[in-house]
Amino acid sequence: MLTPGPLNETYFEHAYLARYLGFLLVEGEDLTVRDDGVFIRTVSGLKRAEVLVRRLDADFADPLELNARSRLGVPGLVQAVRDGTVVIANALGSGVVEARAMLSFLPALAPAVLGSDLALPNVATWWLGQARARDEIIERLDEMVIASAFSGELPGHGERREVLGAALDPDERASASSQQIAHRGIDFVAKEAVTLSTTPVWRNGRLEPRPFTLRLFLARTSDGWRVMPGGFVRVADDVDARAVSLQRGGTHRRRLGAVGQAGGRDDVVARAGPDHDHRARPERCRAAPPANLFWVARYVERAEATLRLVRALVNRAGDSDEAATRVVARIC
Image: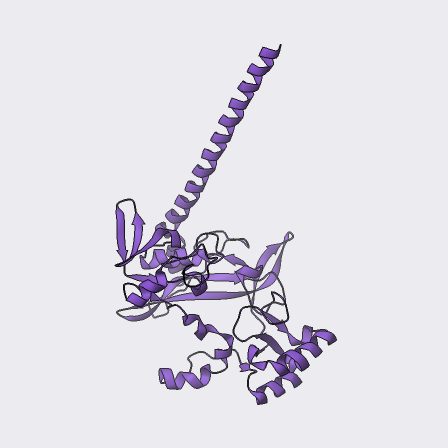
């Protein structure tokens, strides 16, 4: 599993998925491309990697052919994909299906692609590249959330990814409706303003409600798709948030008692069925030894690295004091 590394806001998800699925978690510098494929650097030499699960933005995957400023990718990875020496799950460029503009077409695409309607309805979305939808949304701007159709940032609104129409001041409203949306509607989508559920968060000495989202993971097995026994909760700092992003101030609550910025919490997906025990299963999940050992080892390693640094600094300071004492003695 190819990850950007521990500094990424969603690294916990990568570690959880790799541990649960039994995959090796690697960063770009752990891999090297040779003529006959992609290899993992190990203490016992190079080992062939035939399949990579990509959790790294496609643009950063190869500094030779994509983003030259990337220090996270693997030089030559794109050529290895062309040569067929490695397979990438979440293929390079597949992020186009996550574009917000695609949301407006999901209800119509599902019967043609899947042979059935969507099992869960998506948030009502209109792509403003269509003249009829564009004119209708401009009249109902107060009821909608305006977002970028393709890129991460909303054109004309700095780093904001979406804005609530009702929150726009008169100047912003005139700019959004008459200039940006009317002239470049293909760059925008309008979404139904959905209110997120809330969870209690300890702030300023008291419990306060904050919007949150719950991300679940599914694995395909020989028995079909199965839901993993855990989840990842993202909590927004803004009470009126319409979406939650860790890269823009959101916090998180990790599963199995690991403490996130907003506090620890167990998020357990219990199996439904006649033999389901609502009391026993969460306790067994909460006490899962592999997860506990994973985090114990991780923080022991960090503590050891910190102690090594402190010892080196103490020794350096001691050497400096002795040298200074000898100089003073000579002068005297």
